[in-house]
Amino acid sequence: MENPHLSKKLEKVSPFYVMELLEAAKEMEARGEDIVHMEVGEPDFPTPSIVKEEAKKAIGEDKTFYTHSLGLSELRERIKNYYLDAYGISIEKDRIIITNGTSGAFLIIFLGLLEKGKKLVISDPGYPCYKNFGYLVDGEVCLIPVTEKTGYMLTKKHIIRFKYRPDVVVISNPSNPTGSVYDMETIEGLYEEVSKRAGILIVDEIYSGLNYSKKIFTALSISEDIFVVDGFSKTYAMTGWRLGWMVAPKWFIRAAQKIGQNVYISPPSISQHAAIKAFDAEKEIKTMRETYKKRRDFMLQELNNMGFYIPVIPEGAFYIYAGIEKWGMDSMDFVKRALVEAKVAITPGYDFGNFRAGKHVRFSYANSLNRL
Image (tube, rainbow, N blue to C red; front, side):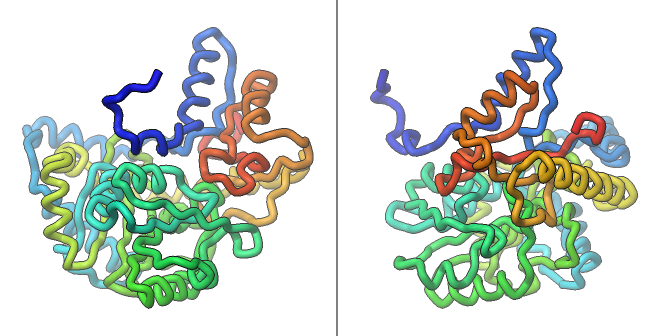
């Protein structure tokens, strides 16, 4: 039954199938069935102990009040030092904004940059929340199909062939769902073409710490006009702490502050105090990254042997985007049968776009090697 009170914009927002599959799997587990989870993109490692101890300390010291709307000064300073140590680039602390997860960062950016008639360009397949945020702020979402020919990545040529002016272009590096890792030359080309058309480039680097290639850099080294979004959820196994950050051009800072003050007042205080120590958990982070790589190598071999089509080796994140044409069924039917018959939960391609979505599924290898 249609509800006249609901916004028409919600009609465009697609369901998050991975969460619906997770909920179905949880119901099966409640009935005593043993389900192997390869659907959700959530680290299976515990948050580093040094981070948890710092959170306890912050609670004990009653650091439970609102912080500055842009985030704790100490945390922003620590992130500034992270970019200097990891990439050798110096960023002004004032350009760093702490947010409620990377979702909070994208909500702020899209509220500030998009409106009715403005075009948001993303890859298909791509992370689904980008387009849904775009719909919620009344933007015009434009999906550009990408294939194995470009490693499932958006390129300068895609933008050249795009017949409209792109107002905002978003990529993730490394990518969800394909695990592709961009090289600097590709992002430089993208930025050159997007900015030539007076557009804005946003690079989501939430999986930057889970990079198994030799292409280690940040888009911030290309231009100060590029928005970069990152956070603590994936690399630092802190999904439930809901803490991210963005590095934005100076001209956007005041706008971001006003939006953040109204949307969530300030980022969560305990999470911020705890996250200051996340950058000191180098040993645990290294162990996680090495473990993910071993799992990826195992999964690639097993899935290839089973007949899945994987033309591009994923070099980052913890996903494998695999073709299922061999079995001649739609990806939604495939994942439902996998859950019921094999007790394995995976994600259909429809979560990530429309292009060849029925012919692909995504595996997450954020699970123990024994379970995989």
